Length: 581
Image 1: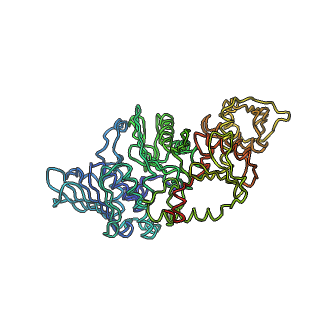
Image 2 (image 1 turned 180 degrees about the vertical axis):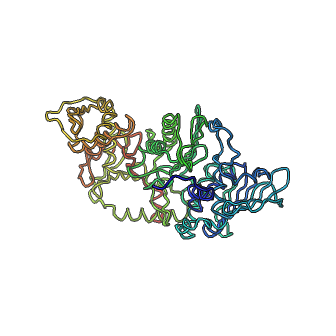
Image 3 (image 1 turned 90 degrees about the vertical axis):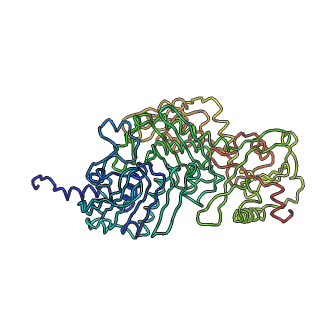
């Protein structure tokens, strides 16, 4: 090895700059943080050539004095902290004093700034070297101009993507920074043309404006709570807006977007009873935590944090999501007319690239034309497939039922058709039976039953640790497990109602994570799904009517995986489809 030597200042600055600034969006991130910290109410961002040629930000914040400008581009120069204790009360987005120093090292940097009182000054720094600082003209606030990115570090510049790709990253960063500050006006310009305008607004409106056209605003709601040491504001989508990815699950803590699996998990727990597996909600969560209970100084870009009250926040977030969703769950008011209070069904796709969703049961003549067309085509397609009943005996009311309906029969080996109060109900026999069995299983006492032939299986050390963590929960669920050695375990007892195969129960005990309630729900879900009538199974009229009666008795008309168990089509909607308006 070569002998150890201290790097010269120029090389050290370039290494440090490369750690903080890796692409144009990094410059955008740091400059927006500074403008927000300066108390700006109006912030405009200008991007040219994806940020490679030029990034300029204009704000009306507090500005900098001549003395501030003399120091601002030097390493670890900051106005946000003085001592280590200041980290305990930190409320600003930036605090390490690396931003302007790193930007000035890898760009040609110009800053014009003015405070409320005093003159404006202009600072010019290229490649980390001061060129000039002189009195200038200007209004309160700052104009920061960073051009020719990585001109002094050509090795890094060759790894940049084409301008359109870099611009997309800059735009995403702009949105990420603007979301938690709805009180600030933000403007984004691409090649001197306005790309996005975000006026001062409510939190919900800020989300909708940032992702304009991507969500149906009627399916987005806002809810908040204040607790000891923290508060939560949430903009949440109803289940109809679910996605197959987590793209629109954003977590912010003290106005910073962070990566915290515990909070993502909390969102999924909150939605798990109304979203099928593999579907994820639209959720923007803004958590404000007492600075003494959080530490951001563990990640260079402050994307992670340590929380002293993580479990408390996690628990409250789950509750908040469930409170929001409880407003929209299926529920039936059981009176003489069987009034439907709420009955949401799975949405259908708009005919556009964003695949927005619309609820059949919420369809009204005033909805956009594109929704009417999709609705009409979807239902006309379904009605063409409906059977024509020639046997009048199939059209009857169940004499001993408390609901006055006509059962029309089974179609497509899955759906039960029911007419009641001028409404056609299309009931999913599997989803309904699954919910009925789930409620029955979860409502009965768990009795453990010893197996005549124990189930032996192999385990890894990681699986052993996981099973040990869940052992008390498994015991309460009637599952008894013994460890034979470091490689093998044995299941000796199972709940009396368990009908899972050996491989299924082994997979279950080796894979469970989460709370006691989560594990219990997963077991009961599996049992109900396995025992329920399946798609393709024929069903006689007596069994069908039993399922229909039980469906109308349910307080929540969704299967345990979150799918709706029916949708309805009113006489008025049918008349509209065939032109009898």
